[in-house]
Length: 289
Image (tube, rainbow, N blue to C red):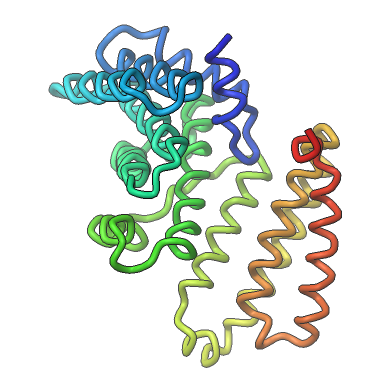
């Protein structure tokens, strides 16, 4: 029961069903023996203990046990299932560090970088992967993209997070997780990645490149198309539709904020999008409970 409650609060990922992620985690923890499976299980326990009692000695001990199990599992060749277990464990520990709400901890980034490294080097994101790997890649993609957004806007040079990200070449040294998923929300997430690419372009490039405005318009067109496909082909619940619409509007607003200087009527467009976004937020049950 406590695992399900913890999952409902922590395993929420845009475009993925929380119950599917929970099922994946439990399969990785319980259906295969070995130290990698034990690491996943200890990570689940650590996260559950953190949610039950807050940061304390027990949750820290369980996290350390998960890390010890993970380290001891790396012997010789590693199977694809074991790699997936390592990624799941890393993502759970990433969530653990984020949920601690500690301004001094930057270990969450270690786990995202480690998960991304395993996915890329072990080709878990290759076309034709099975359903579990598909789900796992989408889950990791969410944290990768949101980490890039957070590092850009809330972490500054000189902080431990930024230094660690630069040391690993987080933004450039390794390609992004390529999630060729058919789930439109994941496609929407990948469009946010492209908008972040726009944000990371230098100011001079934005003003001098003749193709810059066209590229922004292309992203906006694909944002509209992705949302249309989502609402038509995967209607879901009204709550799901409103949540996706809010995320879509936030990405669209971000794009317009970045490119408005070179586009006519930007201020009116942004004001209209803000009104629409706040209107959608008032419809979300999760914010009214």
